[in-house]
Amino acid sequence: MSASMPIDPDCRFVPGVMVPVINPQRCEAQGPCVAACPYGVLAIRVVPQDVRDTLPVLARVKLFLRGGKQAFAIDADACRGCGLCAQICPEKAIKLQTRSTNSHYGAE
Ligand code: SF4
Image 1: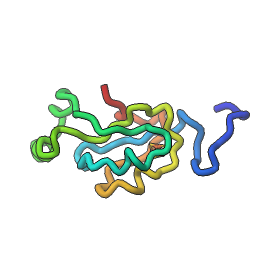
Image 2 (image 1 turned 90 degrees about the vertical axis):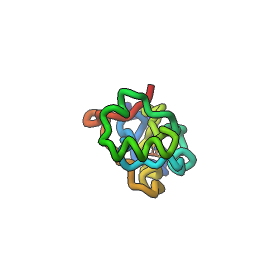
Image 3 (image 1 turned 120 degrees about the vertical axis):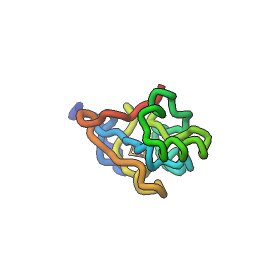
C-alpha cells in the first residue's frame, strides 16, 4: 500500500486490500449489492458448471430456480472494503476478507 495513496473518506481501505466473498449457498442473485457498490466490483453472472458441481444438491436446486446466477466480484481489485454490499444483501451472502485469506472471489 502506498503511503501517498488517498483513502476515500467513505471507505476503509485502498483498492486491493479487501475483497467481497460471496457464499454461493446463500446468494439469491437479487442484485442489490451490484447497485450498492460505488466501484463496480460486483455483477450478477451465470455460475460456471465446475462451481455448480461442487455445491450440495439443495444449493444446486436453488441455483437452478434462480436461473443459475449469483453475484460475483468481477473487479475485485477495485474493492475498497466499504462493506455496503454486505450490509445490503438480504441473504447475508457477502463477507469481506483480506486478499491474503480470500479463496473464492472471482468469476470467469
Ligand atoms: S466492500 Fe462491497 S460495496 Fe464496498 S467497494 Fe467492496 S465490493 Fe464494493
